Every structure is written in C-alpha cells, then in structure tokens.
Amino acid sequence: MNSSKSGYHHGHLRDALILAAAALIEEQGSLSFSITDAAKRAGVSSAAPYRHFHDKQDLLDNVRDLAFIGLHSALEETQKNYRDNSDTGAAVYAMGLTYLNYARNNRAFFSLMWEDHGQMQPERQNLAHKSEGFSLLLSSVENHLIQGSGKSLCQNAEQKALYLATQLWALAHGVATLENNQLLNMFDKSAQAENILVDAASALLAGIDQVDTNRFETQG
Amino acid sequence: MNSSKSGYHHGHLRDALILAAAALIEEQGSLSFSITDAAKRAGVSSAAPYRHFHDKQDLLDNVRDLAFIGLHSALEETQKNYRDNSDTGAAVYAMGLTYLNYARNNRAFFSLMWEDHGQMQPERQNLAHKSEGFSLLLSSVENHLIQGSGKSLCQNAEQKALYLATQLWALAHGVATLENNQLLNMFDKSAQAENILVDAASALLAGIDQVDTNRFETQG
DNA sequence: CATAAATGTAAATGCTGTTAACATATATTT
DNA sequence: AAATATATGTTAACAGCATTTACATTTATG
Image (cartoon, each protein chain N blue to C red):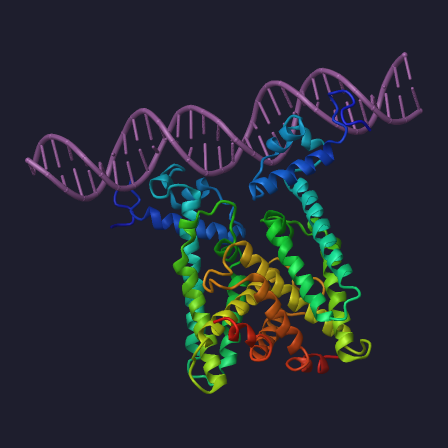
C-alpha cells in the first residue's frame, strides 16, 4: 500500500483523483475542470482515470459524497454545541446558519450537492447522504416542538415536525442559493443573509401553532 | 426585411438563433446544447452565429433575457388578477405560486436565470430584468402592509417591506429550487410545494409584526 | 513459476467552441 | 448606375475535451 510502489502504478489513484478534482473545483469555483487536469495533478496520463471511474460524472459523484460528508459533520458539530442549551429555537437557527455558512465557504460544492447538472440518474443521487443531513435538522425541530408544547411529541406531531423542517430547509436553501449567486442583497443593500434567515425562521417557528394547524387536523 | 431574401443571407438570424437556443434548452432540459445544433436549426453554418454573438455565453445571455420577460409577464398577470381583491395576503401568496409554477414549467430557463454557471461577468447580469420582477413582489407586499396597518406606509415601513419581500423571495426561491431538483418531498412524501410555500409565507406575513420589529426600530 | 487480473500509457475518434480566410449580398457614396 | 465599403454568410482549420482502443507493465493467484 505504498504511495508509489513502482513509479508505474500509483497506489492510491482513485482517492488521489477525487481529491484532485475537489481541489480543482474549489480553486476554479466551478465544475468545469477537465479529466486531463485532474489526471495531471495526480501525476498520471489522461486515460488512467477511466480505470477507476466510468466517466466524469462518476468522478463528480464521488466528490459530491465528500461534500456531503463535510456538510454533515458541520451540522453534527453545531447540534453537539447546542445539546445542553435550553434555547431549543436557537439550536434550530444555528443549524440554518451552519447550512448558510457551508454554502458560502464551499460554493461549488454546494452547487454540486443539490443542483441537477443536466443528466443526473436517480441511482446516482445517493439519498443516504441527503437524508442524514435532513435528519439532523429534523431532530432539532422535534426537540424544539417538545420544548414548546411541554409534553412529548404525539399524534401528528411527528408529521408536523417533518413539515416544519421542510419549510425551514426550503428557506435556508433559498437564502443560501441567492446569497451564493450574489442576488440576496441586490435590492435591499443593507440586508444580511444571517438576519434574513434567522428572522424568517423565527417567524416560521412562531407561526407554526397559529396558521396551519388545521392542515394536520383534517388530514388523518 | 424578408425571411430569406436571397437564400444566402438569412434575414433574421440573430432572433432565429436565440429562439433555436431557447427551443433546444427547453427540449433537452439543460444548457448543454451546441452552437452547431442551434445554427443547424436556424439553417446556417456553425460559424454564422459568431457574426451576431461574441460567444456562446453571449447567446445564453439573450436567452436569459427572454426567460426574464416570460417570468415578468406571468407575475404582472397575477398582480393584475388580484388588483381588486381585498385579500392582500392572497395576492402575495399568488405571486409566490406564480414564481413556483414558472420554475416548474421552465426548469432550464429558471436555472439559467438565477444560477451563476461558472463565469458570469457582472456586466452581463442584466440587473434591470431582475429588479423588475422583484419590484412587482415588493409592491404586493407594500400593498399588504398598508392594508394591515390601516394607514399608509411611513417611517421605516418601506424598509420593512423591502426586508419582508426579500424573505419571501428567498423562501419561494428555495421551494422552487428544491422542487425543481426533486428534493422537496424527498423526506416528507406527502408534502406539496404549493402548501409548503403558502403556509410558510403565511407565517412570515403573520410574524412580521411580532418578531423582528426591533431590528428596524433600533436601526435608524 | 506461469498466468490472469489490475492498472498504467500512447494514440486515435468524434464532438466542441472558436477563429481565419474567403465569398456574396446589401448599403452607401460618387 | 457604377464603385466601393460593410454586413453577413461559407468552408477549413485549430485546440481542448471526454472517451475508447490497443498495448505495456506491475501485482496477485494457482
């Protein structure tokens, strides 16, 4: 398992190519790197990658997996920091802010994670990674709802949490996406993404009991 | 100004290329059409487009303009339909739903409009089109705030409307983007994009007076 | 140790955006 | 109307790209 056993065989080419691609994406801020460049960076010829990946999309899929791991660990860290905090709402906001900050600090990765760049096959979606991140947000929301109601979750409360978490995700995703494309403060020059996200999330958490409870009552 | 004056000169090649590109984008659901295909569809050689567009991005910029016109007229139509409706909140929701429906019915256009596909120069952004659409949402929000307070907008109310409109835009954009990438009901299978958007927007409109008024009071 | 499998290389293919040299139609000037 | 400049088309070429094929070399296996 040496790095360069012979000078001919690489030893860790698969991993090296994923890291090379990730580095190129970060540096160039876009997904339009070439297989040739990634191979060059790993020190092999431009055909070598095809021994480890079916095509460029396959390589990108593996970079995407890496990106999801990064986001997931950031969310996990945030949730850990709020474990003993009695302000369960603040924990929910913090999850949203972590999402926003990840998007800001990893623009191209964030785009790669969520955007369907033309020809994504369903099998390549990797639902596991996506659901793991959402589960963390969901548990924060559930924790907050328990705190708010004074009792444990019951009846359609689980569905309520699921619905609220989806709303919060959509909100955070919109803020992060617009911010990343330099659109969010195009009109309101003084607006800050963090404020917009937290204020809107506050309204969502505050409004959940008033507005749309009926949707869940009348549904079962 | 004939369609084909001589068989050699096209007559309306510039417009024909924009329409051909738009058609290819719609058909293929992505922006990865080739100049050659667009030229072929317009009945000219693959080098002819370069007499009318500096490069492919220039052609895409013109397709984007077309897409913005489509969204703007849809929003304008919706606003017109709610002009004499006393339910000003419903008008705001309708603007969001129009945005969502445009995104659904024009996936690739929607992506082209907002996403920075790698190398967008600031000059090519066409701020006018973007701000025109936002202005329509903003006026709907202002109208709702006037209705709610019983008096006309005063003090920092304009800024409040700007801030709220930005929040609503981010929300609608997030819902539309996640929905277009088949992510929105990945976890909550029963969730409908329309419900998520309207319910969350309701909470935003309901919560604006309670939660973050202080941000505007302490700011001036 | 022989041989199969894995993993590298070089060369070729076809598609792409783009440019250069050239041809023809249209507009303008005399 | 003839001469000429400009606009707009063509064909042929270029480099860069993803990908494949034929071949070479190293590693693993019986």
